[in-house]
Image 1 (tube, rainbow, N blue to C red):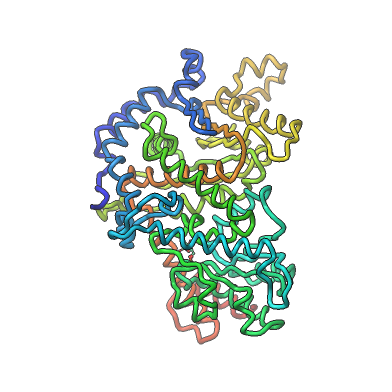
Image 2 (cartoon, helix red, strand yellow):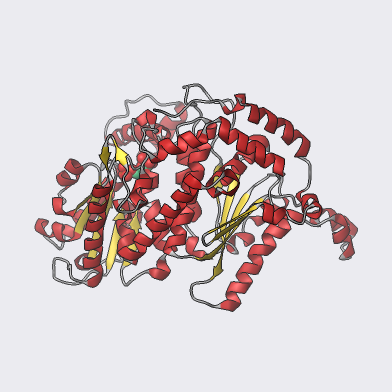
Length: 539
Ligand code: F6P
C-alpha cells in the first residue's frame, strides 16, 4: 500500500471551490455574522478542554462542504489509515511515519513490518523514567559525587526545537534542574553556555537521530574536551548520555552503551519529541508530566482518526489553510499564543511545517502547478501586538492567524489574566470587523487623517480557548499541528516526511570548509569566490 497520487487541481471539488471563491472573495464576514446569529455555534468545535471557534473565517457553509468534498476526493481517510498503521508513507526515504505509536497506550498494538513496536517503545520509556528520576532525586551523581544541577541538550533541528520549546512551555511544572540547549555550530553559542556550567554537576544529553550532524558532533566534541579538562575518560559514563538511531557512532564517540537511549528511523526528526529525544523534557519536568503530554497527544490522535469532518480540528485547520493558501493566495500564517510560556512555539512550528510541506514535486514526480507549504511565524500576544500587528490589521497582505488562549493562568493573577484575555478577544474582533469611515468620522478625526484610521477588517482568525496550559493540553496542541501538516501534505499531493532541501547547503558547506585550510581549488560563482577570499584574508 502507498499513498495515492491525486492532483488536487484536477478534482471536481477544487474546480467548484474556484468558482465558489469567485463568488465570495469580496464578501465581508461581518455581513454573515449579522445575517446568521448561529454562525459561532455552527462553526465551532468543543472537544475535551479545547474550544475552537472558526467562525471568523471567510467561509460559508458551502465552502465547508466543498472543502469536505476535496478531502474526500483526495482520499484523506485512506491516507490517515496508512499513516497510523505504519505503512511506508515516507516513500522517498522508504520509511513509515510512526511518531503516533510513541504516544499510544501500553495495551495498544501497532505493527511495523509485522512486529508490534509498542513493547520496545515502553522499554525505552522505562529507561527514560529511571534515568530522569535518578537524576532529579539526586540518586545518580556526577564524577565527584555531587548531585546534578544542570542539564545540557546538545542537538539541532528536531533534536533541539521540540525539547527546547516544551521545556520552556512547561517551565511552571519544572523542578530544580536548569536546562540549557546548545544547537548552533557558532562556537559563541556553546561557549556562552559553558560559562554558566560546573562540569561536576551537569548532565550532557547528546541528541542526534543520525549522529552524523556537523553542528551536534562539533558541539559535543567541544563540550567533551572542556569536561575532560577536569575529569577523566572514565567519568564520561557518569555524565554523558546519547539519544540516537546510530548506536555504533554513539559508541565510537565514547558514550557508554548503558547510556544510549535508542530511537527508530520511523520517527522523523521534527516529530521526535515523543521519542527518547524527549529525555530532556522528562529531566526538566519529571517523567509523569512528560507522560501526561504524550497522553494529550494520544487523545488528539484518536480525535483526528475518529471525528467527522465538521468536528475534526486538525482537518478543519488544514482545509482552511488550503482555502487561504490556494484560493486567496495568502502566503503566510501567524500563530499567536496568548501565553509567554509558548514563546518558542512558532519557532518550533516553523521546522515542523516548513520542513514538511516546503516541497514542489508531487507524488507522481511532477512539479506541482499550485502553491504548497505556507510560511509560518508568530510571537506571543500581547508582545506581538506591539510589534507586527500593524501589518496584520492595516497592511496589504492577507495573514490568517491562529489565536491560542488559555482560560486559566498558571500563577493565578486574575488582574493580569483578565487584561491578557481582553486583548486576546479584542484583537480577533478588530480583525473581523475593522473600523469604518463613519466610525472614524464620529470620533472627530481631522479629515486628512481619516483614511489612515480606517480598518478594513475581514481578516481571518481561528480562536482556540483552552482551559489551562498543562502537559496534557500542550501535547494535544502539538499533535493537532502535526496532523494539520499531514492533511495538507495529502491534499497537496506531496511527500511531507523527507527533507532533501536541507542537503545541498550542507554539502557545499563541507566543500567550502575544506577550502579554508587548503588552496582554493573548487569552482564557485564569482560572488561566492570573492566572499570566500575576503573571509580568508581577514578571519
Ligand atoms: O535540518 C535537517 C535535519 O535532518 C532535521 O530534519 C533534523 O531534525 C536535524 O537535521 C537534526 O538531525 P539529527 O537528529 O540527525 O542530528
